[in-house]
Length: 447
Image 1: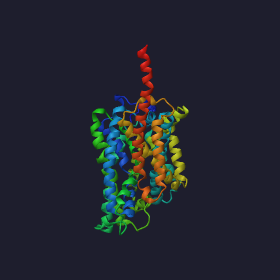
Image 2: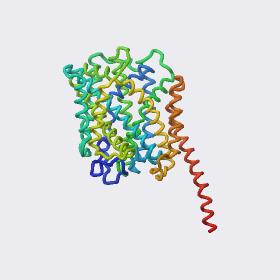
Image 3: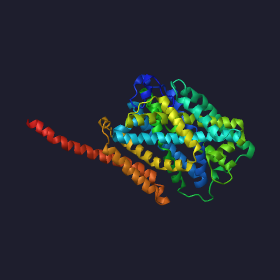
Image 4: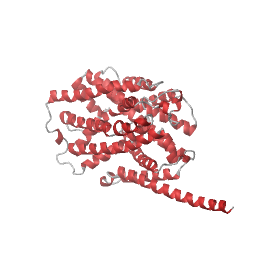
């Protein structure tokens, strides 16, 4: 999607189903999508989970996440390719206009939050390596070069841009591991990293933690719609399937665990701590590695934030502005948040928005399974979808606020209840509709 076709209809790319001529080749779409696999976030998450629950539990949680993400995104990608719909368009079928606006708001705000985090990592690295460059100037530089990456005709730019950077990311990750071995020696006990007596159920906590990043299902939806139907199986099995998450979660996570076992002093882990360690190991080359990882992921964050913000304001307020303007708005918002001390608030917001996203995925899968009708697109609120969404979200938030034993099941309970409630409500709605139609049919027969 970062390299989505930008023809004359591209300004409205989020507001209309894609026709065949606007679809992308499978290699081009693969290079665009795999920009999402590189981020310091994935490295830090793997290391942090290992620190809390033990390396083995973290690895089991990663493996289960690879399987679940691969299976779910296989379904989502096939449907998105077949329908050509975006998250915003499909949400209108599920929830009506108002409900879809909320889904779009959650989507673009989450993408903005991630753009803030990933951009801050680059700005911090610049400031750390070149102390003469103050943080606000480094942050401005990051935003100024990031926003133009999604201007104009990116169909022939960002897929190639991210494709060229992919080998540098992989080489940089390998170089970081190799240099750490050269400096500190091989850590033969890296699989024992973490608490001395890890919980036997720690793997479950690790697995459910990765459910907090299910916004990637929405990312998949908005990328996959650009695939061609003849490539559907390839995209479902490889591009958006388990191989992608083997790199995104497993490779990055295992690398993070090993690096933490080599470099970590036992305190709390953070992206900035990992960046400092990489810069100390690789110097200016480390800055290049950080730039590659964060710039690749931010092409997706900025693009999806821009397109979905454009759709949100158009659908809710009938505000029609070109994508270029919304890209600049996203850049300004990202810059302000990078300078404001709101990271703790952003993390809290992401936790709650994550519940909405998990519930959205549950409703979306149920809607795909039950062939959600398109006649709900023009109603203000579809009670079937909105009811299933909000009730499952409420359940998830209640569990999340409860004891740790219950909180660990909040994401799964949210997902299962969203699927089940949508299925139940849609069946009730069909039964009620049939009852209303029967008298009319009988009356027409008597006439």
